[in-house]
Length: 385
Image 1: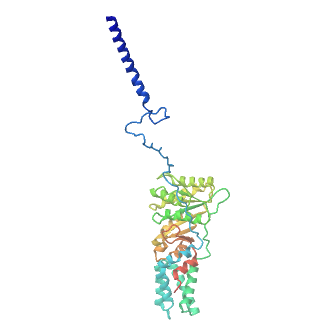
Image 2: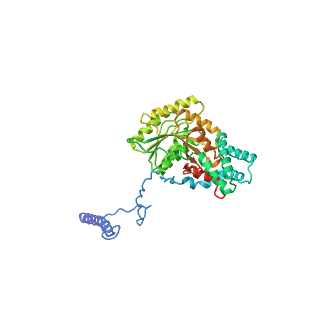
Image 3: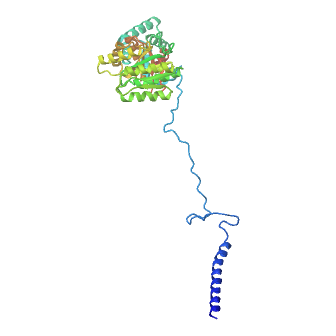
């Protein structure tokens, strides 16, 4: 009997244990898989990212821009007729000079006081004493012989005499054409403070406007900003600038510039030189060396002297120093619009025996014009006198 009761108890325990094992498995099979019917294996997203969260888009990679954009290449204004286009600017500064002369010459009677007044006007305009005496003598003779008194007649006579004093037959062309196998070489000289480096950059624009390819040589190594300033002017017209270390040998820079011009096949190499005048001997040695070293490649074609028109007769004394150092072939007269002393052009040519080839009439990049005597005189005298 005891064996029967034990067997029954054992059977009950086995049944209860079997049911406990089967029921959890059934319940797990009844739970639908995550994601709905047909989904096999999907991991449940973390609590902080709900199932319907839109995944982040991959980052967009933008093209990398250069640190410095290339400079915009400018097209300089054509030089042909540039002085005529700048005529009004010149006429404004020279108005008193031209009208004063015409007013006196148009009087009914020209006595000695009147002629002395004319002389004073010409000298005040920096024509120079000797040139003034020649001009007045010629005018007196013409007025005496022709007996003219109307404004129109006197104006014509004065214009003719002033134009003649400017020696219109002088060769004012810039010798910038390349030679066989090498470029033309132009040295730019002048005192610091006359706007030399700026004018050198403007000359480059004149050459580019006339169809020349240009390379610049920054041989003024003694002024810290000179090379940087010249390079900026060159970039505007697509011209390369050869430069050296600050305080370096100017002749070495000039030599390298010409060599680079030969290698690249440009038409013209424009060399900006130092303009210190503390010591004439030092200046002579320095400029002389630059020229000698450059001429190892071939002769210098042009040496342009930069003169500030506002310095008047004092500027002529400085100019004479340079003519003793190097063979100056032409003068560039700057800041002519800022002075009523337009007669300085006559004085420069008479005292130095060198033609004025370019004149500066403003601060704009293209305000440097080829000098034309007749157009210059017309601007001096005005059109409605």
